[in-house]
Image (cartoon, rainbow, N blue to C red):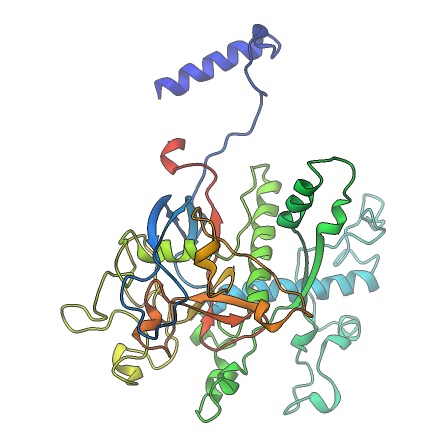
Length: 439
């Protein structure tokens, strides 16, 4: 506290001299103060090094990982997988945005949907489009509103059981833009850092993705298994609100992380606070480091080598006893945080649902990747070979045997494929070395 008071007095004195610092180097003044706080629902993972890779025998002789010392910087991670209700906040936001944009275009002078100035004239943005009034509720009983939004509903032969006002979820897409920093850095290096020769637009990429989960995964993943109630209700019914969202492919999970960043940083800008780094999927090395919970050489998040505790209770939701799914308390996915957390406070790092990571999958990635937060990233294009579309998944799920729920086991799924047993959680970088540096 004494140091803080002393530094404050020195800065105040120097600032009183016109900010010149009496000729001393004092840095730019009036900078915002950065006081890091844990994002809601996330836990802090301290920086550290660990032995990434097998802690036990490679039972299937897959040879897709090897023991390797990897260092990871501090970051935050969601304490549970993203739930149905959390993902529904995303789908509702996108749906509301699209509906309001359509209403604003048609009801150009209606203050219920368009921002007006003091002369009751529509306020336009730099592109000549009306600024949308995001407050208030859309009046779905208004006949004009229904008429404008008619194209967003299922019509004709697609109407089921007389539900004439059911939205067509295929029409709700999320659009965003990314910048390929790695390609930009490669070109900059190739050009020896030459400035003014590269148009940054060539590294910008526009992405548009449908955001609703594929609920039919419950049926097409298991052709000869009765899963109709899950296909119909798992994402939509409040009984499953706190269950992990599934049926979301890698592209949708990435879009969710972008939207989450946009939502958070928009709020921080409004209250004039420094923005956070972008939410994202964790790298494989971050995921495994977090899953181990500080137990470097243990096969499971709780230690091991067994999947039961001293009382004989199973410690995760997986496929025990050669197929007795219910022996661990759940037949399919169950409510998040139903088992004890690991040493870092993370739930369900083993079992329940497997989780997407940000990394492209390569059997030999351990051999050539860097030992500082090993990260092999590649977002495949539609015309790329199918092998390039593989993304690493971790943690195993309710349908997997014990081997696949180990910390080090890695497998893959294709980036445009959704499964009834794959979900995700987000990570976000911690800006600095450790939280103690800001105390």
